[in-house]
Image (cartoon, rainbow, N blue to C red; front, side, top):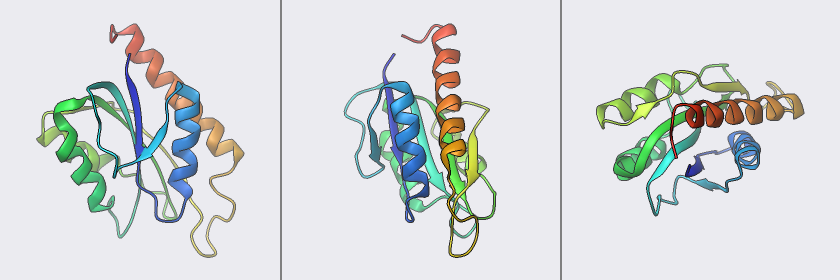
Length: 143
């Protein structure tokens, strides 16, 4: 099974999660500036909430790479506790890309809020989320 990890992170919180996810599934974490070079079965896509939505670069990445994405697993962080799952799912679905129903989201530090997050417990939970999604796809027959 071909797995890729892409993320967008302004403050570094989602970057930390992306590296934990990538390590767990044996992939390399890259930013959404790096397009896919071949079809992948599972794309872990990390994004943070900025003004209530994921950054436009995340949606642009999906648009540019839709034909090479088997399915997406969403992860991310935010100071508000909100997830980017809904907007990412809507954008992907419009392009015919499937999105796994479970996502991972945790607090990210911003100014004086949620200092030290994501912490080691958050990173461990992100890695466990990634492994579970990988195993789920393997059991369902992805190669």
